[in-house]
Length: 262
Image 1 (spheres, rainbow, N blue to C red):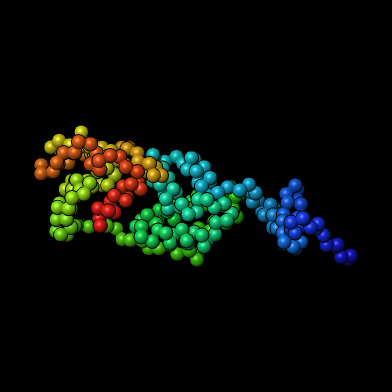
Image 2 (image 1 turned 60 degrees about the vertical axis):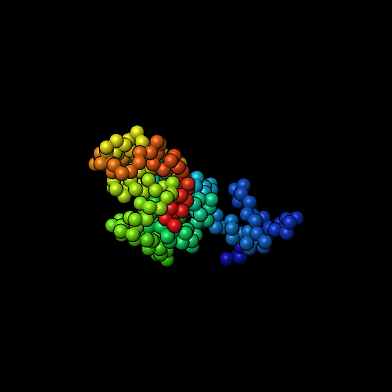
């Protein structure tokens, strides 16, 4: 059987070789490199891989737009995408590797175990969808080599007498917010939505602040059980506006809260 002649490519003025296939150009420093790129393209084409490129941000935005979930749930998804997945967002889907996913998880080491778990579930779901759509052949977030950090344990515990003393005595713009959370049992989002208009002898709790990306949004509480009235301690002052002073972005709240804790 006669040996097939090897294809020879012309060398460009910039020193690279160019191979053309169905109108697409594949460049290489050598003829072999250009031909290998073409052959890889053909193999992927036969396996059903789509060749238009999308970044994770572009695909995640599309994926989020197709979710039929409650507004608060969608807001939580958007916050995780904008914040936890930020290191991966500029990357083309086909460029995301198990190593880049591991690097992203490393930035979450100080976050709660629950937050890391939610991030993992969300990323896996988005990339599973990208596989089904033909943008990538396999989901790099499912690699067995990836070991997300354990994260911090839950912080729901009884405060020590010393911690309670500090909350009551250390002046800070978030002091009243912390005091209401302490004495009235409000969650962070609920307390951020409370203003002086909601306070009398009792606090009317029927809304909460959530974050869509970095933007604060006041919405109804997650469940009907969350709607309630709780006694307001008579020794606490009544705020004129919101307990936190004003509606804050997530970044502004986080910076202020960290300064209060320290």
